[in-house]
Image (cartoon, rainbow, N blue to C red):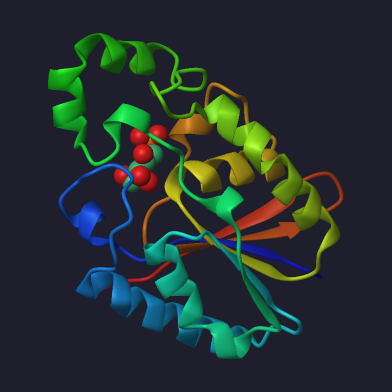
Length: 194
Ligand code: F6P
């Protein structure tokens, strides 16, 4: 049976200091994760593995470590993280103190909340529709992307409610393996200790 593998990029410099978005490179821990991921896929020995990565540096660094294991590596802008607009580069604390009303609004309805000059989860779901259609048709694919994007993809394949989608657990340094079954997907999570 074919599987879809989802992973966030390894820990980035921005993850380390708790900032949203941006385009920072991997931290030392993130580089270690890229190495572990490579070992994992070497052992899995997947035929015709395709890797689809976002175009952010942290994702491309993670994906490129595995390039030799894959039939194709592609970098898709549609897999880039949610655009946090005016909040890009802020920490959640900065966000709350600079834009308290916005922060409260997001908390009230995280799915529909759109960052000024940025995106909402609802926007993301629309942006990701073509990728999801393509994933439905493909054989084995590893998607290297970001927290919000992967929540949308995971929610689709596991039939989650819209209100739960923005809160799904997609931790760093974890591979989520989805294997389609008759009416849903089997979900396995592999957490790597870094
Ligand atoms: O903090 C990492 C990150 O990928 C940010 O770039 C992004 O804005 C955020 O997670 C999405 O998570 P949430 O919607 O819970 O803020």
